[in-house]
Length: 265
Image (cartoon, rainbow, N blue to C red; front, side, top):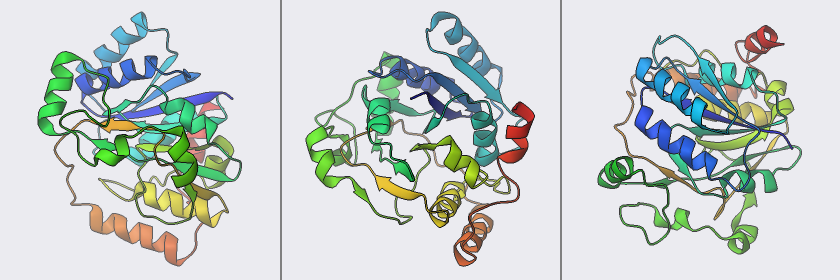
């Protein structure tokens, strides 16, 4: 199966560099890595350019102008550049366990999308990781929160990974789906501006289109590098967009992926 790993980023070049290095350590290397850049400055562009010269990864830099937080639109533009049938989404501050990509692909099912979880690193441990270039963490590592999520076990995953449709724990920093299912709901809703709920609203439309959720446990492990929280000032408006999708049982958004897909095909 051909796999696109889409990495969202905005002005965190040191963290992005660690993430890219963790992708190169994957036991199953993705077909392509598409960096969904929401308007980063020249330092990030330089990091990506330099890494492309040294890496064997097939890297595509999808860039949009910095007009504020537009993660939904940035992801749509990135996925429009994909040449693959299966999409994995992560954020540019997630260090991946070596079997992360393999776990997503192994658990892929027709008519389903996958939601994974994350392990939170403390501020101090994040600083140490960046300074030392650290890529390996586990259950016994210092400086991690929600420690249970750091357990990687194929055996436990069989028993604790479940199919259940709900919005609890929806995060696009650890999610995968088939491209045809993404196209079927017109991707993310470009009306979302500012932090929050664009991923939940997308999932509502997937589930309303009979694409069911698989919640992975003890698999697809990733470690989240600490950072200050984004502004929540757009959250009220974004909550309204989410509630509209729930109340009207929407399975499509008018302003979504289609315009970028048509531009690239």
